[in-house]
Length: 305
Image (cartoon, rainbow, N blue to C red):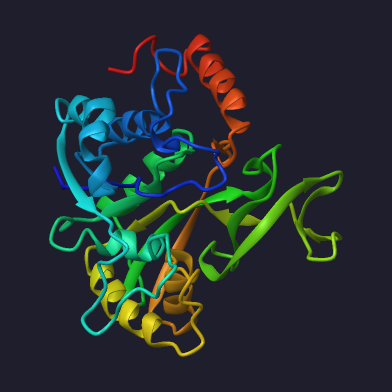
């Protein structure tokens, strides 16, 4: 069996959540956290290793809530994202409080992830379909004319919005064969009467196509991508226009840059599953109800493990 890894980014701080560690918030009927559903679906799809990206200071509690349970099911490894883990010659400016984004998070897996892998957010529920599609791509990749051959779950924008405020999504453009041609990280996307739009500084809303594809940071990648991240991080930090207090090194930006340069092909694997997650504290009430309905309808067993 070909080895494949599920990489879960769980080191985020969650400034909009309103306290606590949102990745470890008990939201399932039996106190499950969101990532346990992702792990359940990934193992069912054929993934056989789980790598958790966390902050070192949360390790003991993380293992108590999630990690020790999963270690009884498959191989488990940990990578640690640290704000100070920067290339030689670089340092954090005074006042920076958050790590350097999803690109830095996956870079922490260097030496740990050596097989094709799927990367996801810990606090997003993705549904079952995308795990199966991405696993199939990773174990049986189609022939590609580009140097790098990746994939992503293509969610429909209207299926990924929160009732409680704006969200950030990678808004994608695709060609007729459903290969990614562009991805733009777009913030403050809100629900509107006509579907979706972006909130502007003057309070107006710029419409977006609610049926467009978006990235939910669910990427199917190969181990050599981590080497790309390593070089790219130096270039990112060397940019004289970088906002060193708030700038983030983001996966959609890195992957979009490879596509733009013609170095990577990214197959967009459409999923009609509905996303939900805990961007805001108020989201947890909807999420709890949604998991209860998924259990009662038989999508998940009474207990996951």
